[in-house]
Image 1 (cartoon, rainbow, N blue to C red):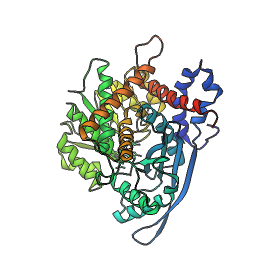
Image 2 (image 1 turned 90 degrees about the horizontal axis):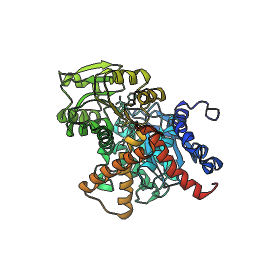
Image 3 (image 1 turned 90 degrees about the vertical axis):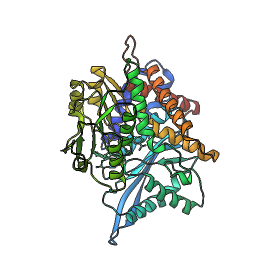
Image 4 (image 1 turned 120 degrees about the vertical axis):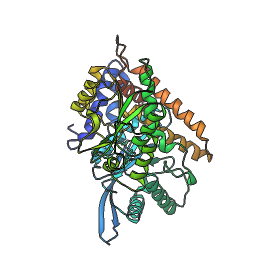
Length: 436
Ligand code: NDP
């Protein structure tokens, strides 16, 4: 806190991890002596730069861009790029820190990083988006590379933005390499990358339910967000026989008691991506639904919850409402959607609760597979990738079980399991390197 006085999100993320790690390393002298946690919590570097672009009315606009390279002990830095007005250095440091543990948990050789800009893509024309992406890459290109740092998409950065950035990287460097993931299939992208985060979060949920002899079929799910992660999580819930009751965006949520089926999900996907519309319009399109302006969906009665929008969107009172209404499992598609107090509510109620760094790792895992395909210049088939995604999510779940039980208790604390398993892998690599 003293070191980072104006970085609440970063401090929150480090505190959450430290809580579990202190406990784990108590009797492990070498981790103390080599100051491993302190070193992981100090990014390798933070690059901050000006992103200057011209809007359609010929006004010159100035934004701030960043790339946070947190840790590359087990592989090149890897993590998404976020374009949103709420982006700050604190937000990106928290995301890069979390990414380090998440990437380690996948079992693939990827370090942790994150980048972005305080740019609001909403209401911008395609040409403005292109100019902004090109300008952002005009600085970023010197800090990244297929063996150095491999960014991907995140909030506000989808296939279109990745295309513009990849094109600019290739133009500046004259090098066609796997420097970004989430690319289009025509130029080195991987099948199932788009679906992977949302699908993976639901596979993780399924695995947790199995530990209590339950299944997803017949369960009611509340989901927040209506972007990439939320719509694909919804799709997988429906495929596995569950009923999706809600979706949301930054203006409010829609509640559809009839269930948001595949046809409705397809409408939302087209509405949010192609038409860049608002979720409120869902209630105009489908009369069974109601829109709740300025609210989040956690008060709706459900069996399972998937927060898939953004950080700190599920606070202690929301967590209490979910528990009170009978929710038995929460799987985080977003990064740190639940705050520390909310997480404690879930833990105290002993419901199944998977933190984002475990549950949403499917996306970066398939990004890791995209890197492998790019290095080998091959493309794997969809069925192979689907199986690999399943296996990776099973592996992460297994690692959480290994480290998530406190002595003498049957309850699996997935937060603890994910923190310790992720930490151990990175920490052991750092020990091997000595003081660097
Ligand atoms: P998208 O941009 O596709 O969608 C984001 C969704 O969240 C939109 O519905 C958006 O609403 C909503 N949202 C964004 N900011 C806020 C806010 N401040 N308050 C309320 N709602 C908000 O992003 P993704 O689906 O890709 O990402 C969602 C979450 O998942 C993020 O936390 C991201 O870091 C995480 N994640 C994503 C991965 C991926 O593969 N895409 C991988 C791992 C994690 P609106 O349209 O109004 O902006």
